[in-house]
Length: 424
Image (cartoon, rainbow, N blue to C red; front, side):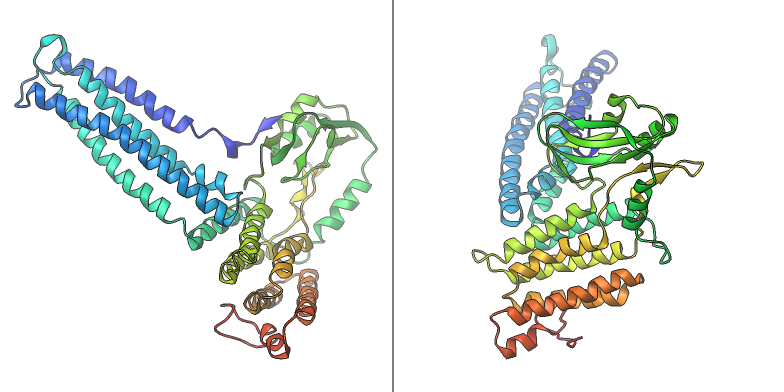
């Protein structure tokens, strides 16, 4: 069972900087003392004072910056959604900054040990200039890190989540052919026509989330065995011990370990191959903002901006990626994927339920659904949106609004409150 590439250990980034600093420092300092004389105006006392100040200052700066950064990240994640902690704390920029800070500290420390080495009375001036360059680079990175931390306001966080979701959609889906039959119908028909299953592969271990599927490897395995692999789990599912992962239909039996290596696991859900996860986090932020303890419907409206954009992109995509054929056209892999109705329910159900007492949220949802209705080219998806508009009207009708508020809640308004556009 493989671990998802999304969760490759970030500690390897500062480790690379540390190794380069140590090896590079040892080589450069040795070459400098061997081939370049110490003929310059810097005294030993000045060199030692400068290098000591840089090394001690950098290690102190590193501790302060990252302590404050992770406290702010934890606070922001708790305020928006606990699932944001991993996203924000694993940002590569933080680990590159940590690596550069430590590299500056280590190189200056090495240069300090070579100052007046063996009573030579010299200072490694080339390395001193390298330390100055690293110090300037550290200050630039420090400024960018502070900017990153200060950008943890709700608008930037929502934009970051939306960007990750758009990237996954762009990678996983291809443009829709309106004539294509629905993926759910085709997948069900494909599975019904398969020979009986002769191999079951189950998971055994602690709970893990399905983070990614190596479809290329699975298709290759199925092709060699002249079989079809049908996965019972989808990306985003949590599996517990004895959960059935897949069945093999037709052909010969496939090595179990090879099948398990093609299923990527992680301790929690990731964005990799999972467009639902971006919507899930956006909905979490919206319903947390709608809780009585927070009472911030404007944040929910901002989350709906990103949700609408993701749904528009999904609505223009084909959902037939749940079936993979080999070069000859034979079906080799079937795995479950969400339907349009699943995406619609995930995006709006909880916000509708928790935001049913907010005129602002109802108006923004109405505008999003009307835009989806007008933009979708597949009739079945348009019908689902129209049905959901009726469901939204029922929610407004059952609310505690008076007649005037009900009439206001039925208006479309992309701002929530501010610019009504009708009651379509």
